[in-house]
Image (cartoon, one colour):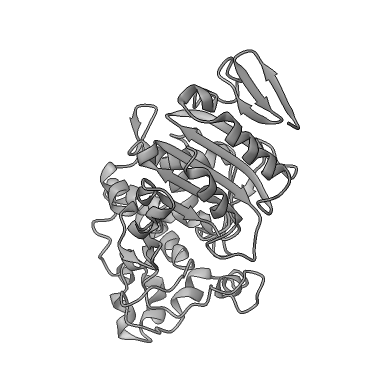
Length: 359
């Protein structure tokens, strides 16, 4: 097989690590293991790797698998490496959900059922256009049920995409709030990642610090995430919709934190209550998947994929940065890609679905 060198008790697959000892100095978070050492099939993952090298999964540039608290697969493609910092696109918005949980833990926020206008006095004019806007709650933003008019189902390369239109404005929160109501809040699902900008402003107002600073202090520093960039709009509001760039291992840490019920190396970073609440299905979107608070879940009807897969929750970023947490298999799968013209069933999801039975 191409790019494979066999060592005693370890397998190194090009830049892919199937190792146990010694640990490199820049990675002390997970012990290494070969798939075989934890009862998996090495050959299956070798074949997956060859398919990735051949770009069978279009534009996928990285794959990391944590299983049984060990790093069993890590490889990069298309010129990427362990140190590559990449924009997560709309996968960024999962930090909005996490920040709300931390704000509840810290006492800044009492309830996600509080109408958002209470936290946004500077946008009083936007709420005055329709009295129903004053009923929009934090929970509705977290489940894409605000009722605000929004078109994000078209490609991000389209000038009809509201997300792209928003990014051309000076005040992105204002752009979202100024949209008319097209349905009664909480009456139906409509994908609106612009809602994460509203959450960013809310976090800034209730904590007294920019969203990026709050997340860095409360989440990134405890997880030892040091290399990140985060852009903002011209008002200085952190772009909690598409603005975060991380390396793949650090993105994986976020999934692992959830797998471990909010603990990182024995220290509590996020309450288990919020992890349970935010990842639990709230609304069924199709026969195959549901949504919680910006986390998606495979529904019970997805059992044909894997009988244990319906407990998986995941973040499907718009360009293919996907993060899957499968508690039943004690596994986290983190996939990086650059695909703008696919919906939720992108090469990244197809890769995960092909992997899940083998792990």
